[in-house]
Each structure stands twice: as C-alpha cells, then as structure tokens.
Length: 308
Image (cartoon, rainbow, N blue to C red; front, side, top):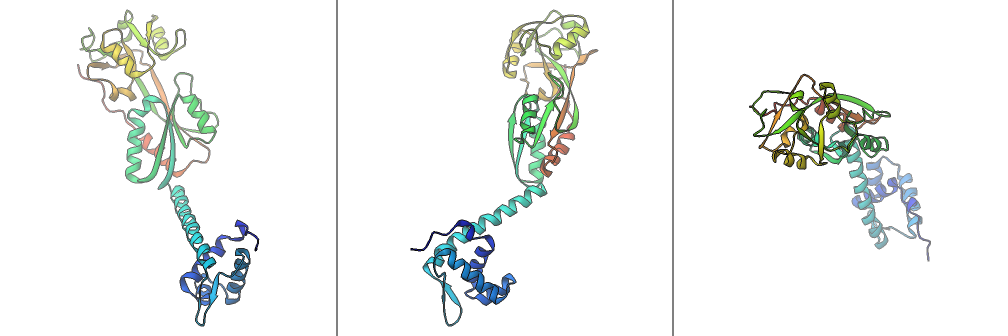
C-alpha cells in the first residue's frame, strides 16, 4: 500500500498544473499556458504522481485524460484553487479599502447618529466593506484597539481624559452637552438656559455618588452642587424620569436624535460643558478605516435643539 501523501506535496503550482493538464488534455498545451518547458511539465507531473501514490493521467495516442485517482485529486485541487483565488481577491479589496471586514468601536452616544451616518456613507461608496460594531467605554475600546481587536475606535475625553496612548488619534470635534427638560418645565420656552437657574432641580445621573462628572464640574463652576439623588445608567431610563417630571439631565448633542418628542432640549448659557470626540487608529491602519475617519470628520451636528 502506498504511503499517504503529505499535504505539502501538493503545492499551489502543482495543483494549477494538474488543473491545466486536466482541462486541456495535453501536457504540451499546459506547458504553453503556464510558461513551462515540456520537460519541466513531465518532471512536475511525475513528482505529483509519486506524491499521490499512483498515476493521475492515462497517456493516450493524442493527449492525456485523468485516471480515477486523478479525478479525485483534481476535484479537490479545483476547490483549493478557487478558495485561494477568492482569498487573493478579498485581500486585494481589503488593501484597496473596498472590501473586507472593518471592526469599529464607539461609545454609546456616538452610535446614535455619528457612527451610523459615517458607515452609511462608507457603504454607499464601498458596499463590499462589512462593518462590525462594538460599543463600550472609551478606555475599554482603546484596550481592544491596542490588542488588535478593533480597526478604528470613536472615543471621547469623558469621563477620564483621552486614553490615546499607543494609537494615532484624529480630533472629530466638540460634543456640547444640552439640558433635557420635561415639556411643561418653567424654562422649556426659553431659547437657552443658565445652569444656575437649575440649581434647585433634581438631576438624573448615571455615575455613582461622589464620582467626578461633567455635570459636577460644570455646576461647581456655576457656584452650586447639584442634587443627584436619582441614578439611572441607561439613557432611555433617564428620559423616562425626566418626562415624568422627576428631574432634569444633561444630554450629549450627539444623542439628541434619540431624545423622545415629549422632552425639550436646551443649550446652556455661560458655562457650556463639552467633551472632545476623537477617532483612534492603530499605527498601520486599514484604508477603509482611514476613509471612515475622513467621513466621521465631516460630521457637523445638525440643529437638534427643539424650538421653544
């Protein structure tokens, strides 16, 4: 019984030669198509047959045809060569920025409008690019980016500064914070609101008590400490409490499109808390990631503040 062939005996060049001889029915024709000499083809076929454990071709008066063993190996060769050709096409598309998977990370409110809008425009340009989106806090997203698990991350300097070490960062703009009021609030008809006029309000916050936040910093600058008895982590929950008249909350303008119609958003006068938004990239970014960052950089926050 012949020994089982090693898979590395069937290299890509040998499989392509097998396919060409099988398709043309001629060693001579295959030699011309592949740019080999007749003797080189004969040597390669003989080596392939030794690896396969027996003849792959029947020698006829005119040309050759596959033996049963040749048909088995040729069937697998066609499948392998097809996969390799598809891999080459996918790699070329990835390096051109027109295809492949693009792994995108973003903090929660960036996923309301900023990231979906940029990904939509990228899909219009390059429908072959397949995005994979991960949501998380900026520090965690940067850990994933540095570990090679993300191709681009949208991060902010809130709450703990910009965690940008070990990556390239591109500033995208400032995301101002608005105040969300119930529709019947005494200040709902004002074009903008002074934070000091909200000193007696109950504030809906997400962070644990005592943790520094943009709200705490802004209120300290305005000369008061906010009352933050109600703590709700999810934005939808915050909006429900505000709509019920149980307090007010700050809303990033990036998230304004997700605010229910029965709430009123107003910009703040005087002290205007903002956070800076950046895109982070690995040192050797994919072309599609660079193009996405370009599209993110075209972001301009539309007028999202509801009229009085």
